[in-house]
Length: 201
Image (cartoon, rainbow, N blue to C red):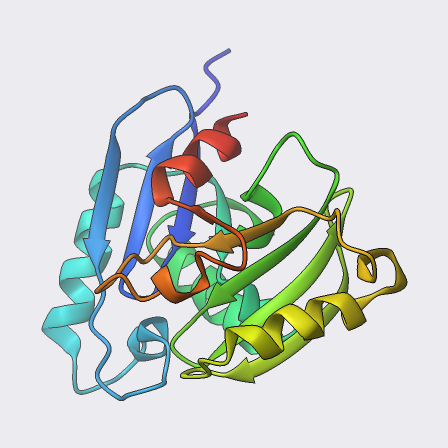
């Protein structure tokens, strides 16, 4: 019996990055951020953007996606409306089976415990990840720049982190204007290709 291919849809700040499970190529659908600090996917149901939305839907439908895992930005983890919004939109595009996942869980495959730091249009989120679960989170303003304070906060994030030794990975999936370069002294920058490789396992 024919089994439909599995797809991964990575939601970045300004794109849907679509990856077929058994294919090395990726398909990128640009998303426009119409309002500062608001995720681009918030506009997928705007009534005054009919042609823009129709074009996105057309591109997704052409890929004939039936089974997909959506890899959300890390700040959407505790915001149910964000997940439901994207899921509903993809179902309208013909996707039948959808699972949710998050970028922080794909920054590294070798270490079962690590710190992840991600930046979205809304904020910076730091998390302690253990065995694929977010154990503790700390949020910062989107333009927060005090990396010395972040290093101190890492030690106070969880008792495990107090004496160092926990790897730190910086989500550099968006890589806009070297925006995450300032965190290079905090941890290892993880690129989009790294994350895609980790998703494929």
